[in-house]
Length: 369
Image (tube, rainbow, N blue to C red):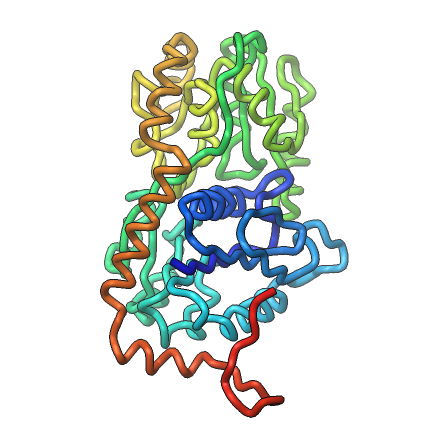
């Protein structure tokens, strides 16, 4: 198949540091290429891929100090994708819903993976209004607020090349991700300090969360047993998670998936998580971690989590969350879409997306370089 992957522009693909969606797009793109598909990636110019890369901005927008508003760059990217839409069998979007109005005429050849929370009230009328746009959820929990949306499948996310490392000599528990009120790093600090276990925090601080970090979290870092590392890259993540006794995932929001949970499992590290959103789908209580609902339960459960068999944690990861499994699942989604969209109507509507070649006076498309 000829497949277009349309990635966010905030980070490169894969991201240098934090960037869960871009990392998933990278895993999927590389696996699809390995399976023999002809894949084109629309992403930032500093992305690295075995696919045909179409650079839509020179570098990731988060790394460009001159960028104030990302939306104009997405508009330019979508116009470029539109010009070449007829070159692909399937267009796979990972940018929320920006593309819905523009690509509705070929809805049968598009699929959109929802990577974020779906419990925001403004989303329901959007999905009703664009009921012909096929969606993929990353967990069953993610679907609950919008049960009548046009979901084609649920495809669990993978972790990358993380592996268990020899020993677990770090003697600490880990918090990984970003500093924000819904991720509850304050809970992680309280759990670790109550049990006298060192805690290491590897997380980024977005601009929107700077005040929360300075007023609520930074004062807690002055106490004993807590080390704030900041953002780490993928290589550092393997060691950080692999040496940890457990990952603390004390979220307080409808978590759509929770990539750091399976990244920990890939390293053989069990997870202590609060029962929110997708957590019960990801963590198998007593096998890969524990699911709790209160701080008191978390404090009691953490020693049991640390004692879990790390080899079994990794085995369950291999069975459920590999990149190869995700790619096979998406190939099934693509084939289902194509089987139902091969109609004269789709071919006729496709012509609406063609951009005229003003030099030649026809609708031919240039090759994507």
